[in-house]
Image 1 (tube, rainbow, N blue to C red):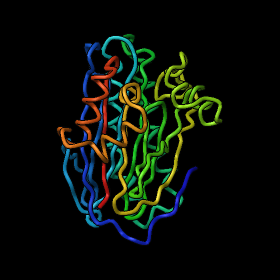
Image 2 (image 1 turned 90 degrees about the vertical axis):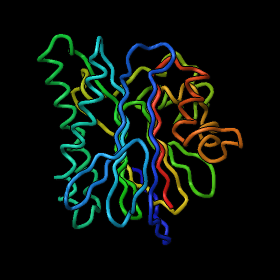
Image 3 (image 1 turned 90 degrees about the horizontal axis):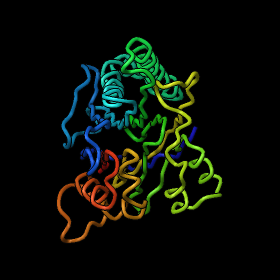
Image 4 (image 1 turned 45 degrees about the vertical axis):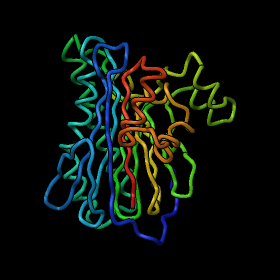
Length: 279
């Protein structure tokens, strides 16, 4: 479990921007993303972009990339985000006294429930057999972001001081090779096995092993949650540039800039970006 220390300086507000695009070659979009606010009164679906107070609510951001024949992938990613909306209120009540080390259990239960739902649907309907979904989720609380992840969608941290760091671990052999220092970013991006998933919600996995972590954040930090379609079109340095220093002629919010550039340079897959900034 990855953890980093929070800053003594307290961020007070959050702004977010989300966008998904079918890409230039696919007929259907199997990606889905979610922005939620939750408090003691309930859980609220937020729009594609907005801002809010960190003192009044917690926030949850998630990206899911579905897979499977016909419409199964689209169905899988939507089940994932819908289940998050349904399960979060109970998890929020459980965490009201302070998340502490219990966040891994809470988020793990949500992932297990989504996995069970996808497996059951896949077994019940022939056209959904074998469907699955990646899921990258960030739960934003005062001073801490708790994350849970499975698959090859990604979570990036962009510290206020500069730079970009992938905090989620790709559940692929290529991802493992890159973490071991045996492949560079360029080599990993062109490796023929880069999209061969070892862990996914649903599908044929018997035992899930999600990646959990906690990150302390500072005012000015930003985070990116994205599908692998965005990664195929942009290097990490390009993601940082489009979020932090887009240039005088760049158009749109951070998510719009990222998706437009990734689709233009690659566009073979569905492409989703969800950016949130703490201030």
